[in-house]
Image (cartoon, rainbow, N blue to C red; front, top):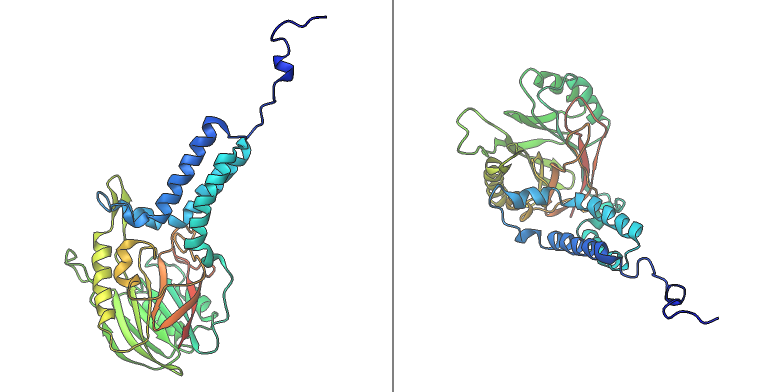
Length: 328
């Protein structure tokens, strides 16, 4: 029997191998992966005008990991080889930027201080319980923000036995197991704020390992709206705080505070350019009900913040964070 011309094409043709390239959608996924890698690697090149878009992007950088996982899943579902290869680019960049934060804490050695940072909220309905939860950490230093007048006596009473040394200026305070001296207000008030506003304090901690200048600060809040990120006041306050720390005569410095910004946010560069940030731990601390932002920070000069982690929720809308700071 003679076959008709072309009759064997269907049966004799090479089968289409799914994923050999992934088709057009595979290339689209690959292109998107390259863009994500570029944004991660060169986020500083993203302009900050209009709307502080660069700062907003940098605040969200760790969450690009979720985007990468979704890209990887889409590439696997479509069996798109070109997309799978391309996704390796953002994976590599993300690991370079944030991989170390995912590693377990290292032994910081014996010379160091355990410190707690917590915005306790001016609407906290259980300040006594909050104070007791922080005492249980056994920290050497506890820094608090949003300590309003009605709640201050409660914190002072609850913390007195374990933290006999403390200083409060405005709505921020520092409690210490070791003696303090040189307590003073740190003026970080933006020029556009006319009313009384005190959110910075400095004191020298006389620790067994030497003197440490401890700063507690609460930078102005930022807002995200249709016009982008409103962070002018926060950025101005960060600049003022950075200048104060640059002028600090004590060599070792620890900064604890609600800085209303992630360490990758260029708005905090006056601080991150002068201080070491945590080497381990993401410590997403806000909001407490669904922590998405890394805005409660511990930084140091002439010392290492070995690990930063969150603690269980208190009566605040922030989670407390705790760190071990290794001293030289």
